Length: 333
Image 1 (cartoon, rainbow, N blue to C red):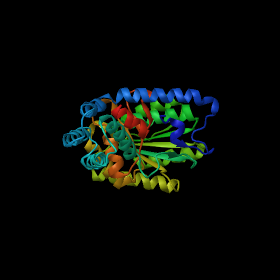
Image 2 (image 1 turned 90 degrees about the horizontal axis):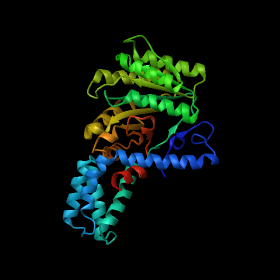
Image 3 (image 1 turned 60 degrees about the horizontal axis):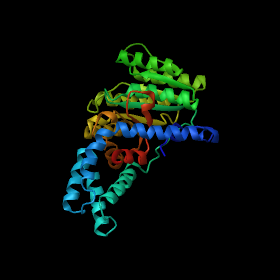
Image 4 (image 1 turned 90 degrees about the vertical axis):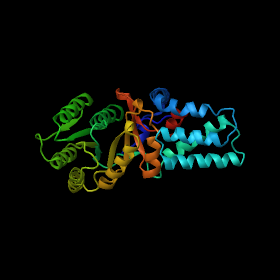
């Protein structure tokens, strides 16, 4: 069953976001709704894969099957390396007699893709530090500021967390205004600096405000930048140092927003950002607008960075915790 926000976060009371037994029927219905919407919004990627996979149903698993499956997975941006591993595993199992037809192939492929989507690193977010500092980075146009605003809303409204938003994107006035609107909508504290001020100073003040006000979570939105802009990437490392100086151990989580429509370029972005700022999780956005949803698998396998949240639309509920099993089922079922 799909994960919800209570499953994603570890809170200081020892529970994964709280909620008692009386809430379980409502949570179960929400989770079913999450999966229905995920499946609907993953239609483009699923259609691209299913056309090839369904064509193999009730047929022999022969060389043509493996070639067509390989082409479909690569087209969905699962990545050449990951695709080769998956197809080789399925071919070995077929040769041993463990797979006898297309229906078994589809079921086993779903299991393998779910396993790939899980990494050895935790896919949860620990909110036990007081306050917990989340640093959000990414390339321009990936939906970073919107994701920050939606995350603040869910933390406040669904988990009862006291949140501070820091607008460290000081070079784009629209980003500051956008985040301020989100802070008002979510009912959280908002910290900004003068136009074109130093991002590190805004991050510093946001953390200081979180400490002073006894906040549970401080989320710092940074300016979008290309992974090829060395001077701006160096600026991110400076922001991290400033945060760590203000609060030892912070930032406790560094999330990068990756636009799923960019496919393999998103993988390169994640790799270079991870080298600069020690990325601990991925927020994969715009999954509803692409046939390249397999990029989530490529990132997990090749970088070992867990996808922690996904964006599948414009609505508040369309930012949601990532569930590997649901994701694999939505790709293929």
